[in-house]
Length: 444
Image 1 (cartoon, rainbow, N blue to C red):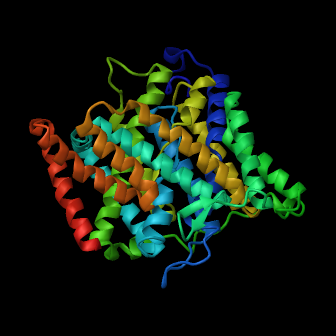
Image 2: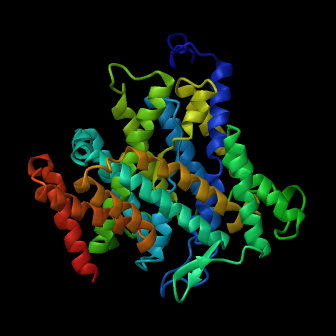
Image 3: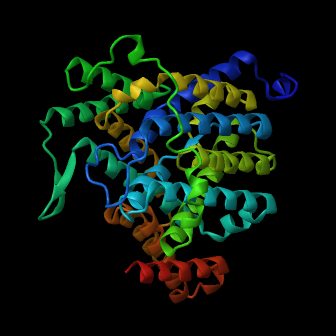
């Protein structure tokens, strides 16, 4: 085992790898409860006509299994200390844009995730993935990441009741003295304190403390006995295979944009995370990522498996840097994290105490982290600033990641051409321009 993962070459030990794996798990364990809550639209009372709610227990199991599988493949095949799980932002897009906004059944949405995963595999194996990534200007990549951050934070504020609807101003401040809202605000404050103190797993610990505070104050029903904490693994029967049986429903303009969005966001989430974690761990060689193809294959395979089981796009997690900071340097770190996700399968009863007030702070904090990419956008160039700004601001205002991407990608070639920088626009961007223009025409 030491020889396979090259412990000596990386100057690591079993203790360092195990600590790294445990730290990464704690840093991202919140997804086990946030993802089922998000996909099941917990807190949303009325769904579009004909659209049903996905089974929360099945999504919990699918989340843990997809995370364990993807992380294990990443560790054994890619040999990177990187963990995977259903991605934040993509799960919000799945739930709030595809299901709630477009009125598309969750079964068809899973089929869209499956299609994007299969395309991802083909692009990875053929080497086209790098060409497509290089075609998208860096400033737009940063804008998409920041826009998703604002979108996730907005959803968190809504779920917390901090921001509510208003007939006159569209949105306004909620009743901050309402007990559930106060609990969510408490959760935000606790999470900020923990993360400011550089406590690994601060988001997860913040959720636990908030849930305990809710139970102490009577806002959340406390679990009864050991059976309220540890129980049987929820069945995936309600979701398993639905992506395959509904694959024929994906051939529409709406679903084309949905699939492109799943694919696009996963593209850059994965690329950015791989580079960030590999750089921190000292694994980059001549500014290149060794075994990049295997790492990308792990990501795309996990997306396909997760879709079949019953969850949104699985992607690499930047929280893996926490494990690297704790000493993880090889794929064995990921093996440990994968084992933790499998063990977590038996703690599904805790879903009953992880309410929307408990998960809302996690959404807000993750939104803050993702918005950090705003600093990397070249705001001094107007032809860049316009599409970047429209991408960022439209996502939360239109309540749609897809709409933000579409508007930004439409304006980018226009402003670049008008500025006389036509040669800098890759042909792929013109193709996307046409697709997104047609999207708005058909959408209207």
